[in-house]
Length: 99
Image 1 (tube, rainbow, N blue to C red):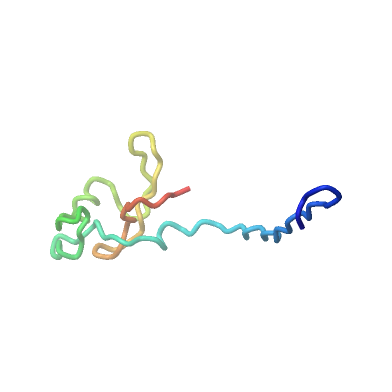
Image 2 (tube, helix red, strand yellow; image 1 turned 120 degrees about the horizontal axis):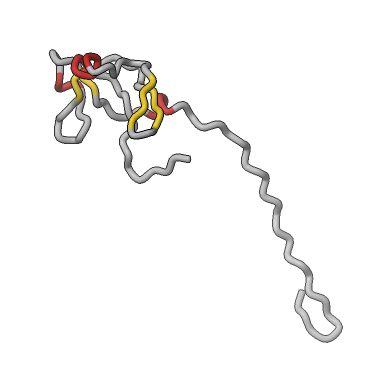
C-alpha cells in the first residue's frame, strides 16, 4: 500500500524465525582429525606437523603423559586423550571457532 494523503502504509509482514534448538557441543574426541602420537616401531602412522613428524608414545609415557591422565601445562588443565598410538588423537586447527 502506498503512503500519501488519506492513504495508510501497510506494515510489512516478516515471518517469525523459529528459535534455533539449543545443542550441546560435541565431545572433542568426536572431532579428532589428526594423529600426533605414534608407536616407535611405526612412526609413519602419525603426522603431527604436516611434515611427517610425530610424538613417540613411549617417550610420552616415560615423561608421565599417559592416555587419560590429567595434566597442567602452563596453568591450563587438560586430559591427555585416551587413544592408542597411530589413531586420530587431536583436532587440526584450520580457522574454525571453538566456543
